Image 1 (cartoon, rainbow, N blue to C red):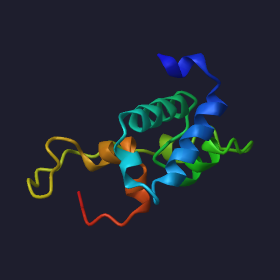
Image 2 (image 1 turned 120 degrees about the horizontal axis):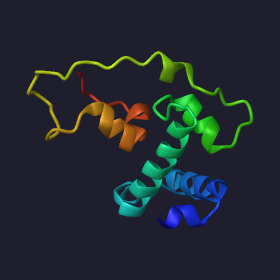
Image 3 (image 1 turned 30 degrees about the vertical axis):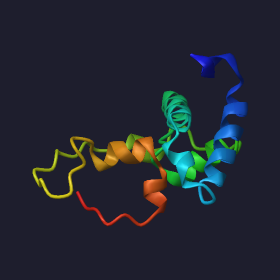
Length: 115
């Protein structure tokens, strides 16, 4: 994979710059490259015990903050929730948790969805 050919810090910087540009160009969030990069970075964070769904942990790790907790307390305390039987507001088989994993912006923006 191309991501392995370059330094992780470089990919973090590129991701942060792309993420910053989202407010000026919402099409960035739909780019396949952006989504692949985000997934790659989230997997890297998870491999070292960080929870990319924890916004503060994710941002600190992306910005190379030296005292990012490892492993994340929220990662250790995470419980697996049962699948919702509520058919209303379901996104074609993709859970809110998975959509947020793919796009942490959902945690920042106000989303009118409950599960």
